[in-house]
Each structure stands twice: as C-alpha cells, then as structure tokens.
Image (cartoon, rainbow, N blue to C red; front, side, top):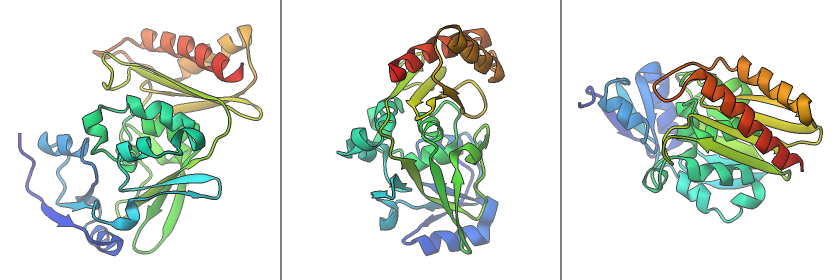
Length: 270
C-alpha cells in the first residue's frame, strides 16, 4: 500500500517545528528515524496531514551529561547511543537493552526518542526509561515541561505528549547500581513476548516488565528472597493483565515473568 497524501516539512530549526505543530496540532506527525512510523503510513494506520522531518536540527543530535542524568536528544539514533563510549559506565541498563532493539539496520536509522514516542509496549527503550525513572522533555511554542516515564506512557502506543508538543530529549538517570535485562522473542530483533529489567536500589530492587500489558510496568521491592520473592512475582504477574495472542498465551507470559524475574533479581542483589 501507499500512504495517504500529506504535506512534508523538512524542518531546519526547532522554532519551525513548533510553529507547524501549533498550526496543525493533531494533524501533524513527527518523523525522526521513521522505522515505526513509515510502516504505519504505508498501511494507513496513520494518516497525518503534515509530516515534519526533524533530523536536520543540530540541537536534537546530542548526548550530554547534566546533573546526574544522560540527556539524549530527539535526533540521536540508536546506534549512536550504543556506540557512545560512556554508555556502559553511565547507564548500563540501556547498554544491555539496546542490542535487543530491532536489528543493526534499523538501529542505524531509528532514534531513541522515536521509540519512546511510539510507545510500543514491547519496545526496550520505554522499559529502560521506566525502570531507571527517566523523564521525557517536551516543548511547545509556549512552554517546556518534563514528564516522568511513569506518567508518560498512558496506553497502547499512547502517551501524555500533547498534539502541539515535540519531544526534545529524554533523560536517563546515571545509575551506579547493578542491573540486568532479559528478553524472550521468537527471533532476536522481533518484538518481545516478554522483556524484563531489574536494577538494585538503596532499599532493594526495582523490577519492570514489558510486552505483557498495554504499557510497561514496574514495582519497587525490598530485598526479597525465597518464598517472599516468589509471592511478590506471582502477584505482579497476575496484576499485568496478560492476554492470549498469536505469539503466546497469557499463562506463558506470566510464567516468564516469574521465571525471568527471579533470575534477574537474584543477579542484581547477589
């Protein structure tokens, strides 16, 4: 199929993006890497009136460390962050999860913020941002605001971004604690059937799951082991509203949450 007709704006500045968004609102879509959006355009799941290409904006192409956070601009491709020499030191969870994001070819085009904006519940970057308690930096023609990852993902491919806002960057807190990531998919690079992340905290552990509910979900627990850990994982697995689909049954997904969860939590707390 071919996409429905649209106007194309190759923005040269942030101000141009904001002006178009202010005028077009919900009829506009942002094009960054395009690895998800182009497929939606071609199948007409998305039919914007205006498509705004933001990849020529220099200020979006940045990876910077500010006040205990790694700021990743809207134009930073997944491969660029994966190749950043400080990644495994500053945000090791992202360094573990990124190789599972698509394939080499898609990572060379896809952007970190594009994955966050698309908000696929099976995607690795939304899960990592939620696990690390990251934030999304939004900008409109009138204001800037930051939204915590826990509040940004509102449903299946749905977020708290307003129609007149663009994601300027996302920020990942620098985390010195042990972390771990696992994913189960039919093939490496496919959408996850279940993905799990765990990060040790001062109080215990933060454990998060993607691919099961409409949004990734996280829980904070003290240092649990034995039957108390099994009980916590079992309760969490049943709270995730897992459903049967062509890829896996709800029971299989719950079993994976329990199995992988125990492995990851034991790994980060040892």
